[in-house]
Length: 330
Image 1 (cartoon, rainbow, N blue to C red):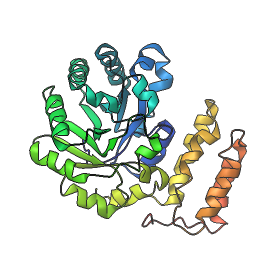
Image 2 (image 1 turned 90 degrees about the vertical axis):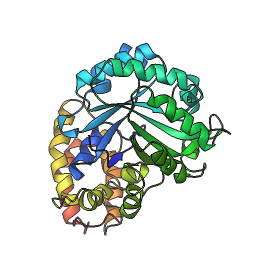
Image 3 (image 1 turned 60 degrees about the vertical axis):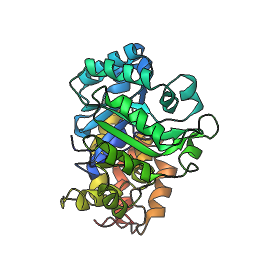
Image 4 (image 1 turned 180 degrees about the vertical axis):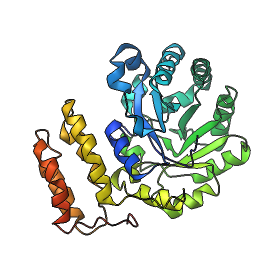
């Protein structure tokens, strides 16, 4: 599994439509699902929760939960659906997540997390990985993070994705937790020094190819979050500069290749806005970007969007001076 660059699991963002769209831009970036709760998988509509397009691969399933039994069952189901990796969420800081005992609050219970990972690994041949933070609330010393990773390492897990901020449980909103706690990249670098045989991936505040290159000198991989969602063509730069792939589609190519997928999804009952909302940032930094966002917002990102307008979207790009060239994402 190539985890040199990946796109972070993001609630309300990295659904199957977003992943299909991003895969049109980047062939090599590893993609993650939104977090899916173990209980929902075991008791809910598995197809609705887990089905994905084969063209999204490689794609990893992120699970949320704290029941070793339920997580084990969800892991096996995820493998059966064809995912390439199973990831356990140990970093989400929201109140709802803490109330249900999963996410970053589990950093308080390393023994329980280890039990969960052991059960998950017993049910699959896929790699089982974790995503966590550097600490929580007032517990932010490196020693605690080191001990936490040491405990999880005993389960045989080899890949640790570290968001280089602590989580403020119940004190900040999820949005505030993405910005207010300071980044401490040095903690992640020290983990790589202390655990040279493990795969250590860094996450948090990385927004340019230059930053990615710098981080790859000190860690095994980089996970990109909001920058990949709000400026998705950033991944074209990643594809060229990090994966040495010069076969990069233009922005217009991306939309042209997306249209057949959109039409097929519409036949299945998917609403147009559920797909097109993910493309708002495609032309970020380009001439005509504001027109593109305005046109989508007014015509395709509303609940009752007119599906016939998808047939005219390329004309809107061509005749309104929207720059579709291959190049830097700006």
